[in-house]
Length: 252
Figure: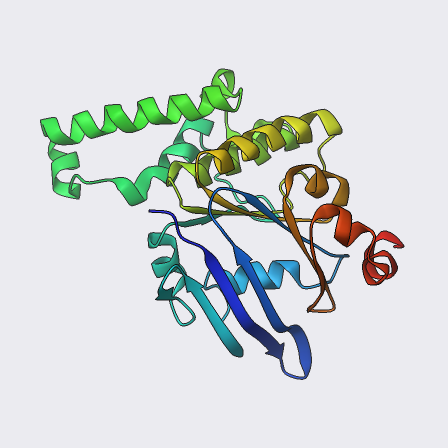
């Protein structure tokens, strides 16, 4: 089931500091929607509000017909959301494959007792999950690293592991918080192609980035945030020619 994420007048204050003010935007299924802005614009705060990691001060968030404004992070994850983080969060001593298997937890059907007893249903599910993890590894060109500790990999490869783990939950909506930070153009381009494939398959993708060139290559619609407020939205051509955007972002 494909649904649109909608924010209506979303605001967040920390004491007297305004981190988000009256933000309204939509992330429909089947395309990549961009959210850009200079450092400190409030992009990550907005993602934390969407995913239930921070409570709203005002406004409403909906996913399809469901109001998730007050939902917990766990409830939002169960609704079909997955995200990556600006700072990589992996089990660095664990093999890459084990990091991926954690992402499949939401879809496990066998009980803990069945797993402990080694019942056929649990063994079959384990085989299925490992096969799906192997498919992800191959899709991201990471199969040869399956048994290596995640923390031993190069930065760009650790980013890929985090994205694979997010996709393991088979989300309806994927939120990417600066996914290509620290990558070169070739690495970024390879991931961009994968993001485009996901959108083409019906997934909604919200791409939060400081790299405007990367966003404008992938997104049909882009929102621009500055100082916690939306200052523009439209096609990449429209936002990159907007004087307010040039002043706030491109001129930095």
